[in-house]
Image (tube, rainbow, N blue to C red):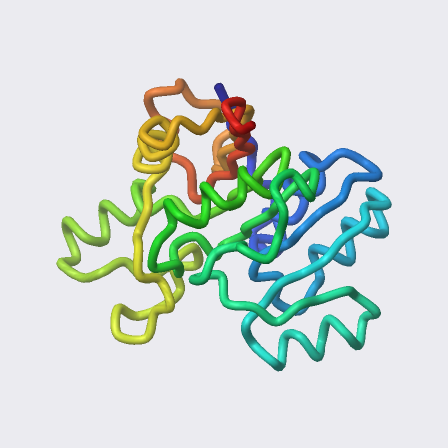
Length: 210
């Protein structure tokens, strides 16, 4: 169902998910980027894949940065869903490193596959072996470059694993088209993906959507 991709250079860690998402999106597509932040991913998609893009973010400072880059952006709260967006109005709806911050992830994922032909969801894998070791032997919530917050100031309210997400998609009857797992290894057997992926990116669709 997926593949293991290598993390080639630790210095580019913060942007490696951008490369994977850009790879997954078809050129010339219509894209909605949820939790778009400063708009860097959307800007790169427009430049490199000639997409027609729009961003959504709740932070006014992020909205202003997007506007300064000439991007189309809307200030909105993802906790309220995507009720303002008609079914099938976008080719891709992207959620990058935001899923774990949402109070109702299942609702938002369902909304994403309603609004978009495909949903692209990328998130840190809490089941990564380093997190397991820190929790088991350190007795503390993991803090590392993939989860860089202390337990008391983290924006993450739902720690999700790769396996958790696959099971959620099955429960919601959402199809996984492709998955890319980011890890330091070139290859790994499928049963180790949940252990070795630092973060994972899924392409979803709802073939039952009418």
